[in-house]
Image (cartoon, rainbow, N blue to C red; front, side, top):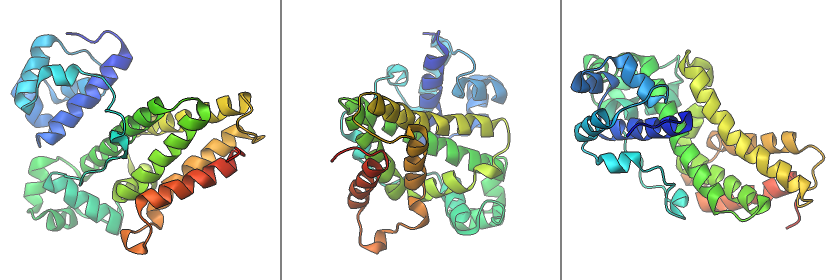
Length: 274
């Protein structure tokens, strides 16, 4: 197997990255296990280079996965974008997430990450080479999950208005159920260094463009009546990504209730009849 199109390579790369993380392996671990450079495997995960069948099989074996499953690009089953099982992260990432939310990326030291992860500082560095690597991995994980959910939600819709409401519901659910990831996704992009910043920013724009396209099409079909479709779509996404700054499970409103409320707000913004 060799994915010929860049789009296919990017999708395969995302699945390989997810499988690696599930297995608790670092880029360095995989490179060593497959006999390639860390840079080469990073390029594979970022969709910048192809991977042959033999190496794909070797990677699947290393991850404890089936190579056929890694090749399967089908979207999640209908409804699965609404399901949020407990978030399971390897200790360094769990410690980093807690520290970055509480102290901010620049305020958190690796020692703070280690304390929250139940590791020594050396133990954190054994798993991830830098604090920046922890942030990048958390943001990649965030965007991989959010993009997959948004694509699945959009695919269920029938027409631009239905697709728009499902996308808004998806954003509302994600930024409450996964509020910690959503919080650093909104607040720490300024801390991401290149080349990762460009890649992650592109993923964020991909989500925005899904909303942009549905609002533009909704206005074209006269299902939405905002005179400013592009600005309205951006206002909707900004409204949803701000949820982690105020929503709390202790506040009395469930993620599902908040998501429904935000669909209503979004329909008002694009001036769609209810």
